[in-house]
Length: 185
Image (cartoon, rainbow, N blue to C red; front, side, top):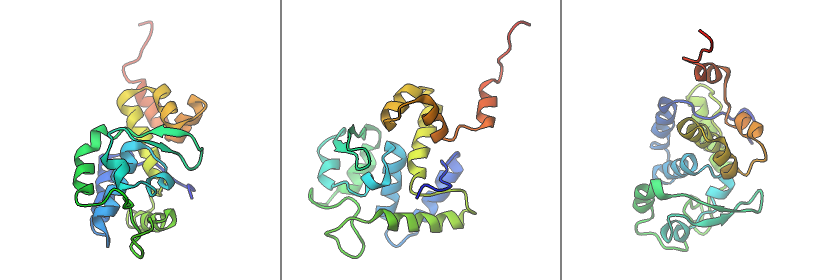
C-alpha cells in the first residue's frame, strides 16, 4: 500500500489535505487521524488501533507496533490540545477511530487508504497515501531538527541511508543545504 507514497512537502499541501478531510462524512475522526499521523510518525496500522484510554491517561503512552512487534513511546506532548478536544465525552474503552459501520470495531487501514486515495485524486495525484503521514512526519522532523539519528530511532530504522531515502530527501534539498557554503576563497 505504500506504492508511490510521498511526504507532504509544503504547508499548502497539508492545508489542502485538511480541507478535504474536514469535508468527509466523518470529519472529526478523519482529521484527527491525519493529525495524529503527521505528528507522531506512527504507521496507519498502529494509529487505527489506538483506544481513547491510551490517549487520555498519558502524554507519552507506550504501544507495541504491529509490524515490528517492538515497543514504542508515543510523544503526544505537542498535540495535547487536539487530543483533549477529540477524546472529550468518549469512554476509555472506545476505539479512537471507530468504524462508521460498527462502533465496536476500528476503521480499517484499507478504508483509510481509500479515503486518502480519493483525496490524492482531488489533489492531482501527489502520492498521498496512508504512508504519507509517516513520511511527512519524518521529513518535517528532519527539516526542523537535522537530527537523523533521533529520526532513525523513532522509525526503528537500521541506517541513516534508509531513513534519508524514506523521507524522500531530494536533489533540490541537498542543493539548498549547500547554500552559502564555499571553501578557499
